Structure formats: structure tokens, C-alpha cells
Amino acid sequence: MDLDLYLKKKKKIIDNFLSNYIASKKKQRECPAKLSEAMGYALMAGGKRVRPILAVAAYEAAGGTSKSMVPVAASLELIHTYSLIHDDLPAMDNDDFRRNKPTTHKVFGEGTAILAGDALLTDAFNIIAKTKADPATLIKVIGELSYGAGPDGMVGGQTVDLMLEGKKAAKKDLIYIHSHKTGALIRASIRIGAIMAGCSPAVLKALTAYGDNVGLAFQIADDILDIIGTKEEMGKTTGADDARGKNTYPSTFGLEESHKKAEKLVNDSLKAIQYLNKKAEPLAEIARYIIARRN
Image: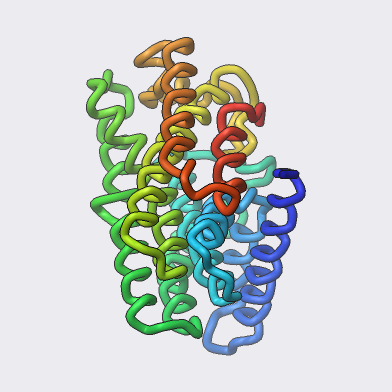
């Protein structure tokens, strides 16, 4: 398959939804203009839409065909963007630029940036709740997303990452940070796609295994890219995490071992979904792309 074409096509669908979402916010008198502007600035800053695309690909692999998946998938980008806004703040990573643009707090101030992140986080669940789909399914999706993004997932990983900044993390702590800070939301994205498709327990189990492996591989690949080149997905300069005393896979396991670990995780993710055959081809190609990418 042509992965580049697939990614562009799905990204365009997600971008159109997000653009319309921000436009609707700007029209609502209840939403302050400065807040909607800050939300739009961060949300439309040019991300790859990895999490929504993974959710859609998992949905298709599980046999889903309805357009109702689009708003649910797009809500994942709201969650991801909120986490980036907060991650960039002086109290966290203190970054001035993301994706070659000034970070949200540098443009709108720290207070508005925090509130823009809060707004995106909250509205993600509002989008899901308003989606035309089976209510019982949407409740499962909301539970899955809140778990993956909350204290047992992404926020928990961010917390341990912050606690251990400037300290030497044990290997088990590093694995916890990576599998939660980045991996948990990617895993949730995959599972949400499967849940929306109403798949069998066996398919959900296979896609969950794929998500676990790909989520960790994605963060390890980011760590490697942070060492060997510009990390475009996160918008930071080479070695930025190491310079801040962040615990990364290369700093703990070494560059060669990190490469091997990422490759094994990708291979394990491919094995998990191999019986899904052609429907899972986009997921397989995305997994391979994770370790092949150079930005």
C-alpha cells in the first residue's frame, strides 16, 4: 500500500474536522475570543495526527465503516494538544518553540495557555458525547480515553518523568515513564478504534497488543531521533531532552540497544495483528514507519 497517500488522506479528514471545530468555537459567544484563538493556535500548528490516524486505522482493521469514527478520532488530537501545551510551560519543560513556532504560552501568556489546554481536554469528551453512535459504546470510549490520558496513563507518566528529571532513573522507572507518558494514549487510540467498530474480544486483544508495542516503540524512536537529528514531531532541537536531564532510552540503554528494542517492539506489534490480514495493512505499515522515519 501507499502509506504516504494513506496518511495524507486521513490527516486531511482529521484536519477538516478540527478546523470546523475551531471555527465553531470562534462563533460561540460563550467561548472568549482569546481562548478560542489560543486553542486554535495550538491545535492547528501542523501535527502529524498520529493518534487519530491510528484510531481510524484500528477501526478499519476491526471492520468499522461508519463516519462516526471521525469525531471520536479527532478528540484524541485535542487530548494530545492539551498535553503539549502544558508540557511546554515553564513549570514543566519550559520550551519556547514547538514545530518551529513559538509555544502557546509565549504567544498568549501562561494563564491563557493553561486554560486553552484545560478547554481542549474538557471539550474532547464533549465531542465524544455528541457523536452519533451507540451510547453504551461511547461510554466505553470515554472510559478508555480517561484511563489512558489520566493518572493511570499519560499524566502518571508525565509525573514520574518530572519527578526524576535530573536524576538517574532505574530501568523499570524509564519503562514506566515511556509506556505511560506516550504509550498509554497511543494504546487508548488503538483500543478506541476497536471498541467503536464493535469488534470481538479476540480482535480487541490483538489490537491492544499492537498498541502496547507500538506505543513504546514510538517513544523510543523519538528518543533516538532526539540524539541523531531534529525531532519534528515534538518540535525540539537535537539532544534537548538530554540537555534538560531527561531520562531517555539511549541515555539508559545506549543507542544500539535502543534501536534493537524498538525493532523488536515493532516486530511484536506486527505478529499481534498478522491474522487480521489486509484490513490491518495500514497499521502494519505505520509500525514499520515508526523505526524507519528520520524526522
